[in-house]
Length: 326
Image (cartoon, rainbow, N blue to C red; front, side):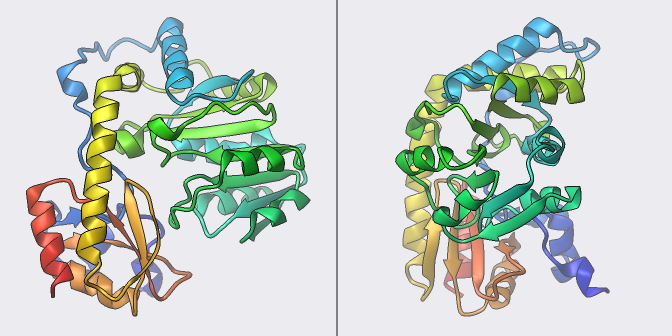
């Protein structure tokens, strides 16, 4: 088998786990993503007729729900998209008048890929201070995979030095959100991570009116499905579930950190949806977890880093603890 076939490009690829270690798909536990394993129970609240196209009113209600829940910046508009990845691919098209992009890294690799493929001068930097030399600055906040959080004050100062500031808030908890007051910001959010609904393919982009008009013109009249829109409205308005789930994830995240404390690993960073550690060998840790049918995330730019999602069931916790104690 070609080595390229065994490279992990993203989390969530259980087929890759099976290629490397065998086993049946249903027996694997996937902790290679930062996707909440305790998904929002939308089936209890939604009945939808799938023969109907999403109406304009439905989409407006969805965008309003997202703008409110995500506390988007003042004087911005919001567009629903088919997952955050879709808008990442559209950014170079919508911002083609810009000449250069700087990305705070290491981070989600699709940003660099999208802009480089478009021909725009693109660089990945390690410090916030290095972002201001480009037209566009991109920050994933909290960052994936380091968990690093850039303070609002720092973002505000950076916004004054660049033409466009793009902030990906896919891993940001609702209770930590504050409405930003600068007007050259583009915010990206994903329903998939916190709500555990990545398969619904629903995300949002908020930004200046002209930018959002361009996005909507490219996407056309039905950017997301009727089912995705209905799920998004109900989930984003369910403040009780959101509040309770945040508490659960904080508790489970702390439990994972305690469980990993017996290992001689360095904590690179964590959120309520994933932890990233530096180990002696990422491939050895991958094998250790794979022996218990658990798939974790490794990175082609590090021989030591591993990322673990948060276990959410008794079975998952039992197998994780067995893997850690091996």
